[in-house]
Length: 134
Image (cartoon, rainbow, N blue to C red):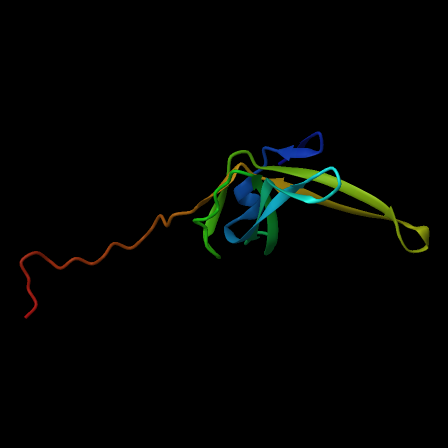
């Protein structure tokens, strides 16, 4: 599998293979700042923390602002929906003894999330017709 970068963004990767089964952990609204750096009441995006079984770690996923997360509970199995992308970024700064330190990571964005419904639920046992308990 190869990765294609356009403007430092990775698209068209196998989300299921990359993250495996995912579980909802928490959500946080990210607000806009005004020109003086003060927080406004305008929500810019939603940041959802999930647990990825494939990565055996927590991952932050950025979702669009209007995403309704009220129906999600801790540990719900979820799927990422819509276009899923990873934005690669690199930051360099002067560290100890003026040595150059660098840090790199990916910002994961998705169009939304949805709960996974159980596909193989066991049907209830039914009593054979014509039998009664007594």
